[in-house]
Image 1: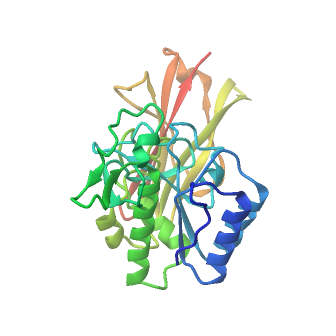
Image 2: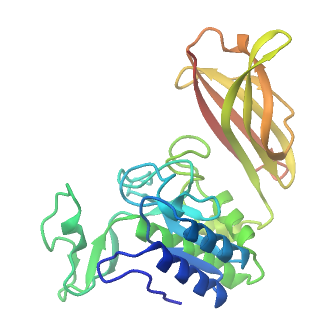
Length: 312
């Protein structure tokens, strides 16, 4: 179902995007790809996204190509969608790809072979780019084009989701999301991070994944509190798994810890909230610490989240 919500110059309005989302959901779309974005988020866009997801649609959206934080970059900053960044030829986040906490996945987004619209040469108009006009044309008839951007990455994720759904039409949007995220290949910093999310899209692993397997680990922040022995650090985050084996939190001194000390053990699965409290004296000896939350399922699947704590 191809819905045109932008004009010939690539511009649009929030109301037009919302109208397309609602139309897609009302006409049975199970997966919606949005290779579009911009700064700010309107109430009509929020309502349209939530309406489509309430109708059972999985929304996949490009993070954007400005190299900025994605939190306020339109629909890409919403929790209800899968936000996709671009990976370069090295498998890591491309420098132009927007980043931030909402990033869920990376997918290839550099030097992608595509079709070329007549009388276009899109790379020529990118500010600061070193590019010779016509350099990306491919083929004697110049009908093909090598280009880059998160607009190419998002439909790869939507395509794998479609592949999963074609094999098992009973999968829900929540199950599709769970498979895509939990089967991703960890890249960059260990665990879920603001540059690569859960990691690189892995179609082969997704096809083998159990739709009910789920492991989540997140450290959202810390707070200074007081306990009987004095000041302490309360850690907020998330431990979740469909069948939890163990979960614990360790700390290590310095930017790249040589060793780890377990300070919270036996953590239980549950909604986001306080994971535990660590006495302040555990952080003596270094002005910088890395927290590492590890969650392991009964099936052996492991998820890690890290948090950098600089002491004042």
